Image 1 (cartoon, rainbow, N blue to C red):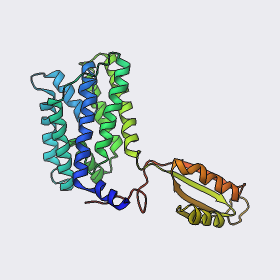
Image 2 (cartoon, rainbow, N blue to C red; image 1 turned 180 degrees about the vertical axis):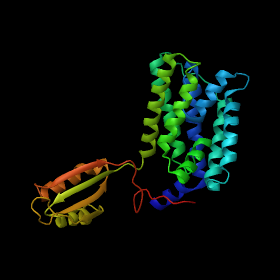
Image 3 (tube, helix red, strand yellow; image 1 turned 120 degrees about the vertical axis):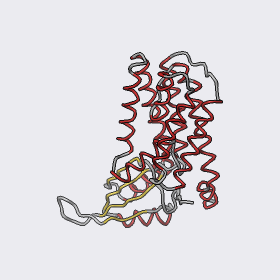
Image 4 (cartoon, rainbow, N blue to C red; image 1 turned 90 degrees about the vertical axis):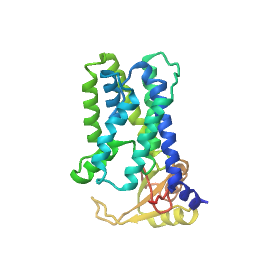
Amino acid sequence: MDNKIRQISDSLAWNIFLMAVGAFVFIIGYNGIAAHHNFVPGALYGFAVVMQKISPELSLSRWYLLLNIPLFILAWKGVSRRFFFLNLLTMSMVTFLTSYVHLDLGIQNEMYAAIASGAIMGAGCGIILRTYGGGGGLDVVAVILNQRYGIRFGAFYFVINAVVMSFALSRYTPDKIIASLLMLFISSVLTEYVLSLFNQRKAVRIISRKSEIIVHELTRNKKMHATIIPGKGGYSGERIDMVYSITDNLRLRSLEQVVFEIDPEAIFVVENTFSVIGQNINKRKAY
């Protein structure tokens, strides 16, 4: 059953479906809320919004398309064909939906609108980024810059969004800029949340003199995976191993009880992970 689910999630059809859903959710957030309050989104879509404000002769969808074209031309040989065409497909979907999906979710309060639009747009971006593609031309450029010059994605988009807001300063009131920044912040938080939603796990480190007994209990009775990492006490110099395991929120409490029943003096460290993929945990493969 798990293998069948993984095959579906790795398929091209499923990835295209997620792109379409993500693009639709993003446009719901912008056209349904943000556009009615004149908020400025980030990245290339934000550039298109500002350019449409400066030169309203062209529609937002046309500005977005025009800004993407040179980026895709430049990136033709810089990334894999799969990544290129999936980004091109996402850009086409967003352009189409921008033109034809018109609605008003009726949120009047500007603060509520910034929160709601950021959450919805962030969820849409997260769904898109869960695929093997990206959100358009800037994602392609970001990948090329990262591969060639080691420029991090976060740094790249920080600069891009700073430039977008700099352009917007001449056309929008300070209140709109602040509300837009709040929207961008919430959007980035929701994007990361959606990205980690199905892959987030708890990384557990257990330092104990009874590590072998703990591992035996975890692997034999709890059907969990665990690794023993040899260690040595910094003060005493005696051997004391560390057990490393990955679990989820539902089994974390049970794991804690098992450990302290075996060794009340154990040290139990839990860390949140952003994404855990591999072996039997949400394994993904390229198609």
